[in-house]
Amino acid sequence: MIVLDSIGWLNTGLPMLILAGLAVGLPRYLVDRHTRSHAMVARGMLAVVVLLLLAGFVLSMVVTGARGFDADAHLLANPAEGFWMHARLSLLSGIVWGPILALVWFGQAQAVEDRRGRDMVLADREGS
Image (cartoon, rainbow, N blue to C red; front, side):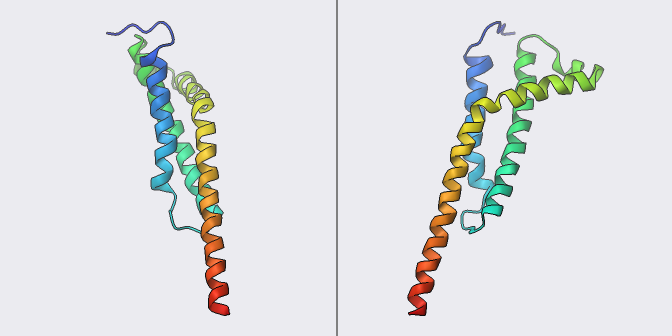
C-alpha cells in the first residue's frame, strides 16, 4: 500500500489532471458541435458539471482509500457523513476544473455565435 501523507503527484496532481482533462474533453462529446442554441450548450455544460462532480466523488474515494482510509466501509456505516465528506472534496476540486470548464464554455458560445453569423451571411446572400 502506498502511504500518501502530504500533497503529491498521486494524491493531488494526478486526480486534478484527470478532472481537468475531463473538463476539456467531455464537452466535445456532450455538446452538439452544430448547434445554434446557447440553451443546448448550457444543457451540455450542466451535464458535464454533473459528471465532473461524480468523477470527483469517485476520485475522492480512491485517494482516501489509497491513504489507508476504508472509504467504502465509512460510506456504508454512516451514509450521510461519508457522502458529505466525498461530496465536499468533489466540490472543492471544482477550484481546478471550474475555470477550465468556464473557458471551454466560452469557446462553445463563441462557436455558436460564429455559426449564427455565418447563417445570417448566407441568408443575406440568398435574399439578395
